[in-house]
Every structure is written in structure tokens, then in C-alpha cells.
Length: 123
Image (cartoon, rainbow, N blue to C red):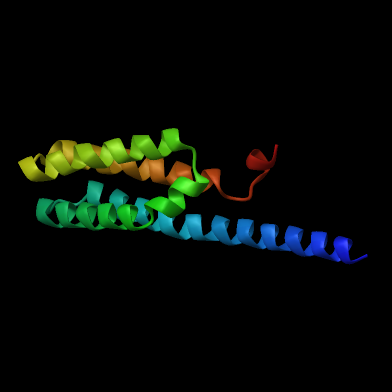
């Protein structure tokens, strides 16, 4: 009987961690995606550059959390886009920076949606 309760306890803990990680991923990646979407349409390039740099720092801060949950192909693609965006910021290339912000916003939104509880993810 003790083993059954231990099994239920472990199962409940795994479900709780899964639900927590779902909400955490949505909060973290959704916020980054919104900020990058706004940066893509900013007319002031200095503000757009600052916003994208701040989001890149957030990405680096939460990288291990993301890497434990997400497919590494997606994580590598996002890393590559951040590297390209850093070059655009360094060179002052506003157009390509805006395009990369929009692309990164979509990638981060997709990453967030991949971990959401939905029928498409359950099926």
C-alpha cells in the first residue's frame, strides 16, 4: 500500500513540475516574443537595438531552462538568429535588425506554443 501512495506522490510531483514548466515557458518566451515584435516596428533604431539586446540577455539567462525543455534544433536556430542580430546591432543595420526581430519573435512564440496545453499538442 505504501508503494501505491509513493507512486501517486511521484506522479503528482511530475504533473506539478510539468504544469509549472508550461506556465513558466509561456511567461518567459511569450514576454520575449512581445518585446521583439515591438522592437521590429520601432522607428527609433536606438530603442530597438536596446530592446533586442535586453531580450538577448533574458534569453541567455533562461537558456538552461529552455534547453532542458525544448528541442535543441529550435534552440540552436534561435541562438543563430540572436548572433545575426548582434552583428546587425554592431553595424547599425536597422532593416535587417527589424527583420531578425520579427523572425525571432515568431520563433519564440512557436517555442512557447509548443509547450502549451492544447489539443494539437495532446494528439
